[in-house]
Length: 259
Image (cartoon, rainbow, N blue to C red):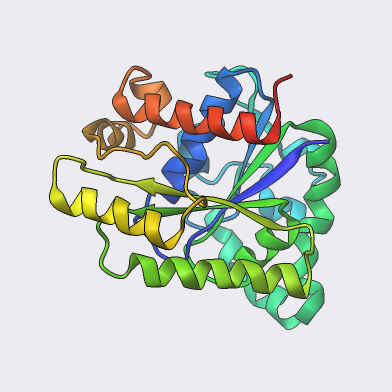
């Protein structure tokens, strides 16, 4: 049975989507059958893989217009990688889910959880950068949560504590199977004292809860974004790509995905 991992943070600009896409490619390169599920109406995970506002998307699934299987697209550039894309129209159904109350929090779980566990080794959900209805849906459907944080961000540790509390709240109120996996530190410049001090501070506050590998600040991520590609499509030999592969291997080992 496969794992569902939500990549979640309540702060934008910390490489949440980059993490989702890069881990998706890295897993697939290691022979782990992987689905990237984009639930953010900004569609930043969908565009590099599928394009803008694709037909057969998550909104079609949630509104019962299409079956889930019909909305999962194989990625030609990488064997073993698939995408459940989103559309910018998704924002229009969020008020409807909110009006449904508690029932609206479990819609994503009801639609995708069983299928994803049966058909993929890993499903990675790219969440919106907030505590809204779709993020709650993702955490209700997930087995694990990864929280990325940007190195050197002034308010990041406060935000991290808030994110971890939110995960605990979801675990207590509706998804007892959910567990926090680890923090992923991104945009690290180890050449600066700020980068070094931030890593040390995180280790003190969150000892044992951080991936051994950190993601370096790397201009190749910007090049990839400008090309509307993942870093593995743009430059698989880049330092950032190598770092994400190491993180993927940490997760593979933790979850025993390869035996």
